[in-house]
Length: 351
Image 1 (tube, one colour):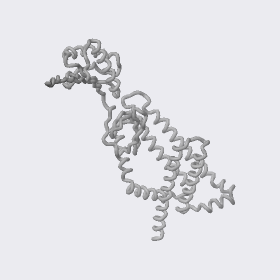
Image 2: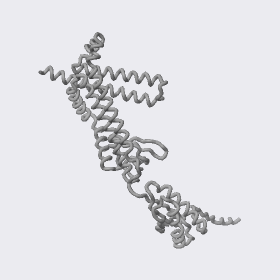
Image 3: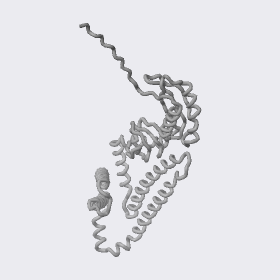
Image 4: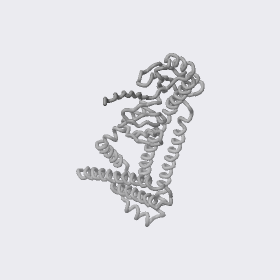
């Protein structure tokens, strides 16, 4: 009995080691694909793919042998009695193909159905797209894992020890990857507490841009220059979401001290409301708040207006342009820093 327990523990940890090696090789293969052009003519990519398939095949064979499935006898019998073995294993082959076909069909249906979510314009479109992407990702992994276990069980592999090994593997991961688990938990709360959705404009750690993808572990944000920055969900703090409510356009400007402030404000209140009807992003007539500051060169005045979400920058540019046109048309001076120098007259020295 002690030997059985020792053998089970040894097999489990060796299985974990093999799985870790395969994972490292897989990500190395992904890295090569990013560095090279992904075309059939690229010999490096082809060699890397073939090597990956061989390593995965060897790893699967080693794990099956480790858990008591005699691979050598199976191949020996296959070579000697190919016809009889083929006839004997036809049900298994058919069952495996059916399982793979069903899995692919489920994935295809899930992908088509979930990608259609959020296609219509609605207040919850971004939310639907976010949830759809998460569900599709989780569904893909669950179906892949389930299909592998079903195929192995069809071929007579006892998946019970493998499941036990996965449980121990999960425990090891849980103890050694606390940051990873923290990212997963944070991603869960970001999605289901709706901190932000795909398509929202956010600012995370000083990086401002549009959320292009949300996963359980990472969030991708693309700024106005097209740069994409990937944040671990555990580090998404603090975050500012500019897409939750309406935006506010703010335009500050100055007039010279010699100008009539009351007349200027009255003139702006008369002329600026035309922007509301001319530009669709304005949700109300621009409002002149009044004098905000008395600086060295002039009097600061502020104009604000509620605008549609994420349109405040264009609205502010339109406000400043219209204010400049109104002030120029009415001869109101916009000040600029000036410096007045006074020269003292030098007294003539007595001869």
